[in-house]
Length: 202
View (tube, rainbow, N blue to C red):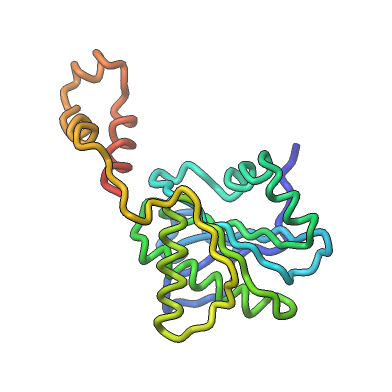
């Protein structure tokens, strides 16, 4: 089955750079830091935005459609769109990057949505896992700098608001796997170890 085409697409730039929409920049560009796709609700009017903020993804394994698939399988997207809500999926190009940098990307998206939505309905923000921390930081930053975000509801799930820890044993194991014989013994590849190190250091 072919993926549904989004109604709107936003490529989100670094703070203090152009907020211009461009669909020509590839993932991982040094200029753009995230992409958001908008799927309008049943009324086909962009007026009731729900922003979903991606969670921890240090290897960039997930794209916007992967995130959308989870909401579709659980029938969350269908329920919201059937009631006129517009789903916006935010995917960071550095899903394991600094929370403050990704919060800047979310702030830009919130400002763009406020500029482009029809009417005066508030925004709902849903943050999963690290996305919950990013959203909390972004909303707090906007409030502290007296910028209006027009967010009425912030929903956070599976977010480590009190901090998250990686077991020290796991960290040490990944750091110590550097002997080629150990790779053979454990039947793992160097790329798997590199991916594990990227996750640990994120």
